[in-house]
Image 1 (tube, one colour):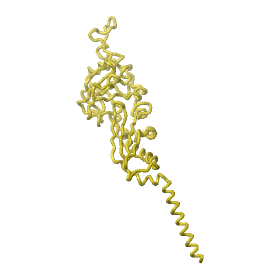
Image 2 (cartoon, helix red, strand yellow):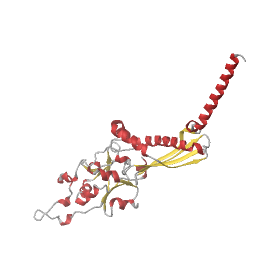
Image 3 (spheres, rainbow, N blue to C red):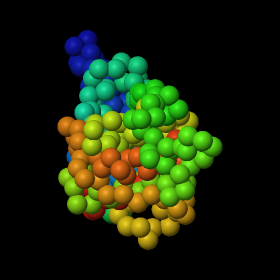
Image 4 (tube, rainbow, N blue to C red):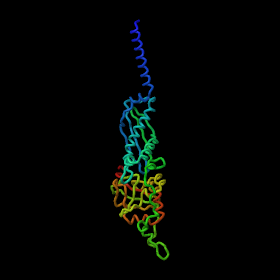
Length: 310
């Protein structure tokens, strides 16, 4: 056998060995093989906010090109988690924070929060995943309040003001006018202790947000993040948003004797703030215990379904 033919034979053998090695690597490498099953786009998804319990709830379906074998499902789970986190991040970035800002506005201007937000996304876990034929069906719940919630990370102006330092002639109601002789309350104007506050905004163009505020008609701030201790605000959420008063959450949130008021208008660029008539605003401050209850976030916004979906 000539040297050339011998070398040709050796080259062919090397090619065969190389081809077999590549094939074995592809079959054994789940990432490369799983790509044959996974499509880049989700087929359908549903994302909504449960403002009563402060959760973002995500349900999604991802289509596969064919049924996935059990051996590749673990990697598909990881890929699906990445896909669903992309969906969630886009949704959360457009979440209304307050009267002027969306979450993406804070992300763009605050590097520290941007890092915190990335770490927050990494902590999220899927709540079950099911393989049906050529589909992956999964869900996820994102907490907005609580120790591990998004609100605990958003930089808000917590507890900047103190109710006790406010000027009485600006914020204290008529019931705090005392008899000049014995310093007792005027009988007909005895202050009422309210266990919380309910504001009806159902007939207004109002948007639900992480940090709503309440003003009187003179533009004075009477409730918001500025008056709330951070622990209370992050744990409970600044306010609850409910669609009816028959909800069991109402009493849990505002107690048995809340002050029920109707906002006359909304304010702020994002229409997240409620405006009360001056008399109703004054009633909030007629009793010091009512003020203490506000600092515990015992506030409910009564909204309609249209407000809820924005």
